Each structure stands twice: as C-alpha cells, then as structure tokens.
Image (tube, rainbow, N blue to C red; front, side, top):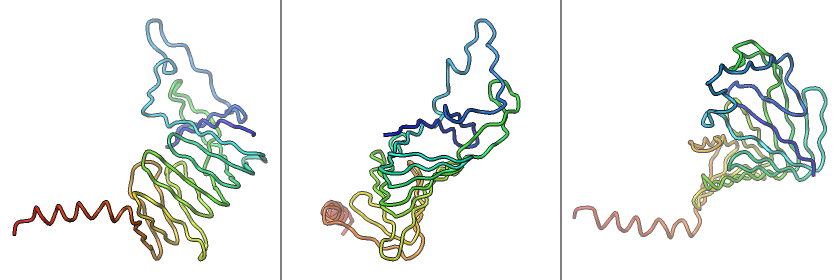
Length: 206
C-alpha cells in the first residue's frame, strides 16, 4: 500500500507535507538562552491530529491529488473507508507563528471520498454510510450525500437516520439532516428506552 502522512493544521494554520514542501518559508531563529522553543513545548490542544491516508495508488497533478483503491483515512478517532478520495491544495499567505514573518505554504482545502464510503468514530459511537462524503477542513465538517436509492445514513445508539444530505461534525456536535429525514429505531434501542420510560412514570406524582 502507498502511505502518505499529511500533517494537517486546520483553521487557517499552515499545512506542511514531506512530498509538498512549503515555499518561501523562512527558517525559525533559535530561542534566546534559557527559553524553550515552540517546537520543544508545542501547544497540543491547538494542533489537530495528523491525517494518515493509505491507498493502492495515488495520482497527483499540480495542486490536485487522488487516492485510488482500498482507501483508508484516519485522523484522531475518525476513520473513513472508501474506493476513491480526491483533494486539492491551495497556496496561502500566512504569518509564521515562530518568526512572525509572512510565508506562502500549501494548504489542503478539501477531501472528497466516493464509492462505498464508511465513516466510523468510536469516541462518538457514530457510524455513517454514503456514496459521497466531502470533508471541509476549514469548517471541520463532513457533508454526506447519495442517491434516491441509497441515501446517506448515520447510526448512533441504535438509532439510524437517513436523509438527502447530512452534515456531520467531526467529533462532538449536532448532526444536521436535510431533506426528508427518516428515523429507524432498533429493537435493542427500544428495549433500553422502555425501562427508563417506566421508571419516569413511577416517579411522577399521582
């Protein structure tokens, strides 16, 4: 498998890739004696986890790239499986947080997964299935779409909801269902809800 590690710094921060070097980036000056450099003490809570993409084949032309065959994408607890994934870079001018100088770097704008897309996140216990998923790294959301015969769906806690379009936040957050949402509740979910409903009725004053 071809493996490419993409260090994605979302929310407008620079993206640095070993295969796509930053352009015109000024080297960071060493910190004064007795001080710690930002690289030695990174603010982990401000840095998104890296994205790891695996595939049988990868093609690139200019700022466009595509992964083909048995594609697996991982970022934090989120995993995306699909047949193909394409994406696009753009050149952005930003202020280097270390040197406070303006530099131009390549930044990933979006990733689009297609063909038997499966998105799983053990932390949120969500499972999404669709034909196409567009991951907007700036907004940190995934938009799921499909066809009339196979609409996108999200399963959570035994409840499956499908719609014409689903906006799925990465991590915690409310899911937005657009266009004729249909909810299916599994027997296990009903069994878990029944004792809670009966307990609530017993606690209510007569």
